[in-house]
Length: 175
Image 1 (cartoon, rainbow, N blue to C red):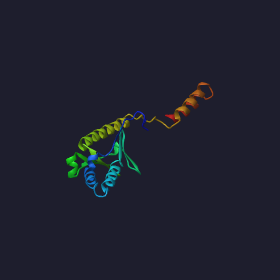
Image 2: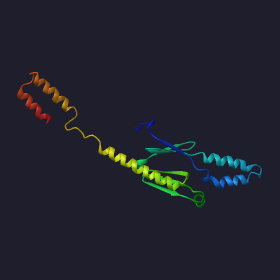
Image 3: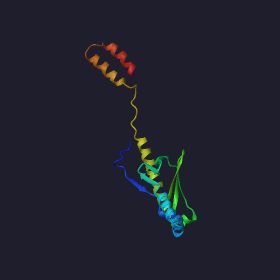
């Protein structure tokens, strides 16, 4: 388990430029019985619906109902999807794919720079995992508890409670 107090996190939300068309239409509709005010409120709520939290080990996507987490080591593909208007506003959606699922980070500002940072973080996390697996302690030889039983037998032999012949015979079971 990772200590949350030492882990760095960054929280992002979709950029307002991703909803530029909705904001523009809502402002144009304000003179029409105030319908534009409702539209502005609806677009603002839609923009603030999603929150993305990036940490050293995972990415979390939260909306008003659900939270989804994806570990960086499980991400296999990172891609950027942009409509023509998103290209003009330099925003885009980032799609993260794993073997089991995918997550879309909507309306990210400067998506290609964020994609590069994500790919770098993913490779660093995978390297950390490889190093951790390589430094795992080796399994002790013999059955669990056999060293304790051998120590017990040696103690009995040293006290003279077991003969030399019996000690040698029992010792062969532990080798």
